Image 1 (spheres, rainbow, N blue to C red):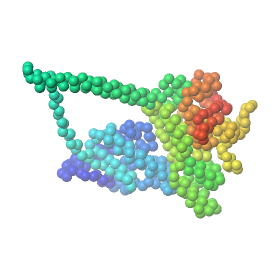
Image 2 (image 1 turned 45 degrees about the vertical axis):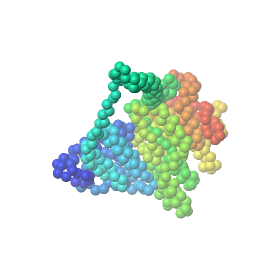
Image 3 (image 1 turned 120 degrees about the vertical axis):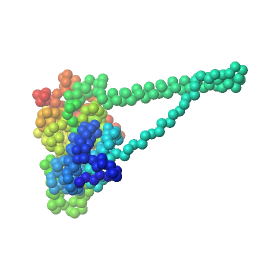
Length: 444
């Protein structure tokens, strides 16, 4: 049998799990709450599980998983793209979480030992019953013999002790009630984040779908740094195929610069502004709605067609923005000649500029249908990462969103684009003002 079974009980005919037992266990884990919000990790588990159940299964290789599960080319460069290793770490955590919670009573366990991707099964050791410790309470009533002075004194002490205990019990109960109230408020906030905020409810309830996964895609700032090093923009096609890596290696760039590019691509660089933006937006997604946080580097074309998507960052760090470029009026771009971030206004209206530099406008938000028109997409981009964070905060502000709805003169949010000017205080963005907008009600 290709799958290793650890610690079988000697002489126990049931020690070796059957093929059906192992298959059923894999399916239960994959269908559990731990994997309900991550299609990617569920597919990962089902693939390595299926391979592990094959008779005489050889070792499952990272390259194979990258191609079969994550859609990478069969010969992709694993040193520059560590998607399998990153997801394997999370997969191991979720498997462990299942057997410690939902599957705590599973008689059969499995794990994926580090250094490989094949499932290893073992029987759960019999749990030892905890020996209960019985504590006999002292009787609340004591019979005090008549004339026994010592007993009467003990009785008075006991009554005094009772008078002290009741206030302590009352305080403890009050604190417990406060803790439960705070916990309940936190749970309600997680389930109903827009409660009492009509503008946020109008937008987020329209964008989100409890039956469709929402993907929050963080910028790949490694790609942005590579563009800075080479001085050339990165196309989406080259980004997906990783063809730009071969182009750089075959160019006349110096060996030192090529090594710089390799070092940058071995790391997943994300700016603080993008992380702060994701934090703001995650707070608007109810806890029971399926959602997934990932990097642009690990995102796929199937997901952008199938899911609701939030792309966080300009196309220099999120090449996926290119898919919607022809639909946008306001485009956050990069002027390679002057090495400065700008916002282009493709069809200026009276009083609007054709090009905005950072001092005039610094962030854009677009709310559009996804590629298959089965869901929606939000694109958030700033002239730098702090401006991106400010734009995300705009979408999380009841006041800002209510003002925007009033500006549109509508009761519900149409598809739209907005151009924002963000204000700074000590280098940190803290406010965003509307500069220009476009609405697309016919796209609904």
